[in-house]
Every structure is written in C-alpha cells, then in structure tokens.
Image (tube, rainbow, N blue to C red):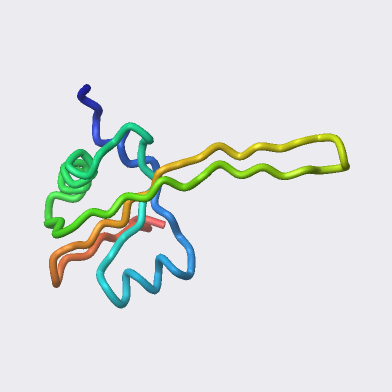
Length: 99
C-alpha cells in the first residue's frame, strides 16, 4: 500500500526530551501513521527534506490510555506510533521554518 509522505509523517514531537535528543544525538521524533514501517518513514523524511540523509529509524508503538473523570465518565486516548529518526552528522531539519 503506497502512502504519500504527508500521510506517513503526521507531526513532529516537540518536548524537552525530543529537543535534548536533537542536540545530543541529531535524532528527531515524529508521530507517524500506525501502518507505516521503518523503510516508509525513512523515505518520507528524505522526500520531505531532500538535503538530509537518514542513518537509522526506530519505531515505538505508544499504548492507549484510559482515565476516569467525575466517577462515571471514562475517557480513552487512542494509541499512536512514533518514530525516532537519526540523521547523518552535519544534517539538520528546521522544524519551525517561517515561524
């Protein structure tokens, strides 16, 4: 099943930990489609940013979470998939271009 790179990469994960990984290991974190595999994520990143080359992709399935509010109402947050993409030394992605 072919997906466009914009369907594979949903959004970047912008947290303190992801910023630390960018500075230390040149590793970017993205929320990706739940059907995407490592090769598709690698191709999507290289299509979205043609000037970078991907060295390694790690994928983690984040579990769904359940919580209770006001004793009776149960709230469920669906699971999602994240990809940690390691770029070649010297390459970088400007996530906030034009902001």
